[in-house]
Image 1 (cartoon, rainbow, N blue to C red):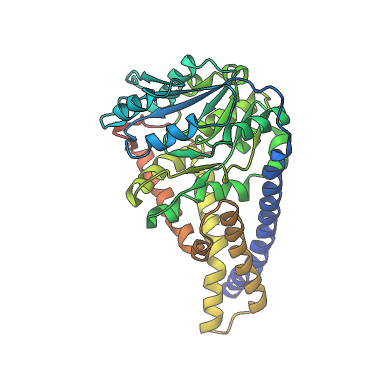
Image 2: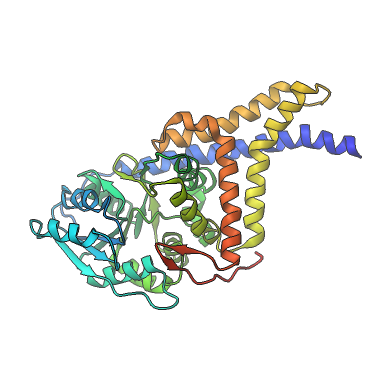
Length: 390
């Protein structure tokens, strides 16, 4: 019995992992092709008015660069509205200084969220009610955009006849925690969400959006209830994408890593706390699928390394060295290709086993903190979530 189990773990399971890796590689390459292809449309003769909407809470270190980059857009008609969400740093003073010379910038003071309202959703809701544009462009205060960003993504939305366009900005990562955690979500999307199927099937669990860049048609945003309809959601971007899918509306993901850069967190601690808030929430608080996902990630990327180590040091296994090498090489490719696509330093892909471990640890931290009702963000407590088995 033990020998059968050993043979399965060191031979058959490796074959299964290789098959799964090849499927992921196919998804990855097709997603890269699809997200680049949507940029092929020619600019329209008349561009709709766009409202650029930026919620701000204690962002004094980055808000000037963000707002100035959007005010400098090469686009015929747009407005920039920034909501100061009860900041207690210099964010508002910085914004008011910029507004003195920028008539296109409007600053509004946010109202304190009430019980059950997640701060960012409430801030975005207030912004949407102030917006005048035909298109609503939501972004974060820690992003910086190239001057042709708005024209490029609006062209993609109009050309694809989409109701929502989103994409993954280039992530600026400096500390060890940022390097280990920040690329994970965009890596997981590129590798695990087959856009070819997601666009056709319109099932909510295949929905993806990135809060750092979401461009909506106003009618579609209102049709799904906007941020008012997801006021208690911790992951507003995914919740909005799921509502778009549920309504049968059209969403597309485009490549924007050359257009927008973002530094989500400025320390390892911030990165850990941010993903603690998000990871279990992103799964829809489904306990068993969540546990299985991270267990399978560990098996897929660590088990071949364990077997190779046993083969080298013990030498009595039936495992074939060349099969193990193929499996490990595929593991590396599954990290290298997305990192190159997302403009993340390629050398970090060599450390993929540790990246997997780091995210598994934070995933369990996210689970525990959520179940215990200990999730906070930017000084505000988040209401305890209701979880489910499936």
